[in-house]
Image (cartoon, rainbow, N blue to C red):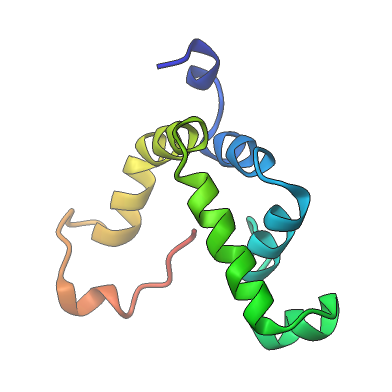
Length: 111
């Protein structure tokens, strides 16, 4: 583990991974999926906003995700997930620390 990653929050690590992308890739990925408290937009909304066909936006997003799988960015994403493990578990399990499959579809997750 990188010592600088030890002091960074999961949000900071994800931001670093996103900054490794080209501006166009990052913009489409963030606008479609949201970022933090900002909700994502549909491809239809982005088509009008960015004046690009949805097929192009989908291809751009796929490229962005592929680039995030490269080792330097993937390490940051993995570290962010490791640091978020307790928060994710608590959001899924609730007070009794048990995850019921039936309840998963009803949960409103904070991430």
